[in-house]
Length: 149
Image (cartoon, rainbow, N blue to C red; front, top):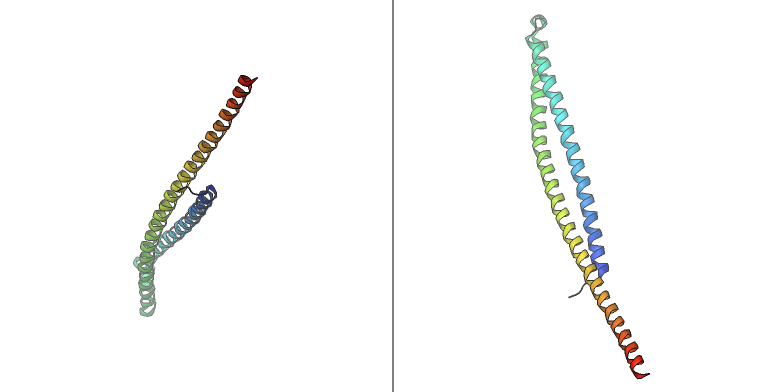
């Protein structure tokens, strides 16, 4: 079963295109993860700052409504942090999945490249054998011409 060398070239190019696409997906997933991590850091810092305000001497002069608003805002910050935490877990899983997909695509590319190289070597060996056969035929014709003259 000898495949056309163009077939292996096409499959190798397709595998390379897949690798390129998986690399882009991994980069995007990593960027998304980094953005979520930065958002989580900002939310954590904001929560800490508002918690510090709640414990400050200035907060002693707040009326009940202001104290209630402050605590509600802190509760909202906690909810945002929980949501970001879920999104971070999902983003981390997405990065891992993209990395696995990239590894699989790279493995496929190596397979296709190896098969392509094997096919090229087979074709080169077949061509070399044909060339050698022609050379042998020419040598035999020359030898026969010399012996007959």
